[in-house]
Length: 127
Image (cartoon, rainbow, N blue to C red; front, side, top):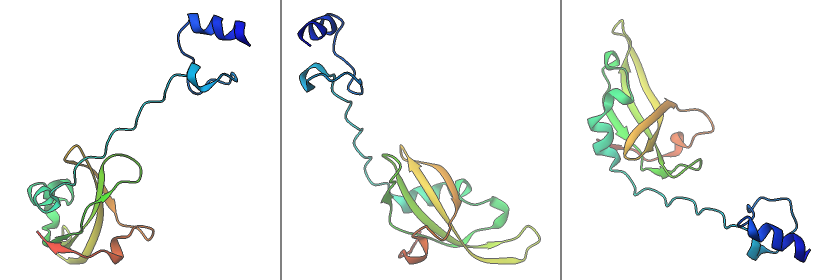
């Protein structure tokens, strides 16, 4: 065991995921996860970038947003956005809800809210 440790010691630290049964002090430490971003000003962000959430021809009206929540998949944030939309033919589509994903202060992605989203139970504020 000692000769293995000396041999590996000459090569640097062993990766923390190494299958070798070495004491912890021989293993390199895993990188710390990045700290979460500060909560975004969701009203300003959505108000300035409505085209990142809705198609401009849908003429979004009565736009409302939920409070941002930490994205469980990373350091960013998620929020829900609701608006009254109109079809291309001018017919009302009613209230549509989207979940948006915010990274580095920008709307990185959006998708229509689904059953497993919390958008149905969120509280909304107008922008």
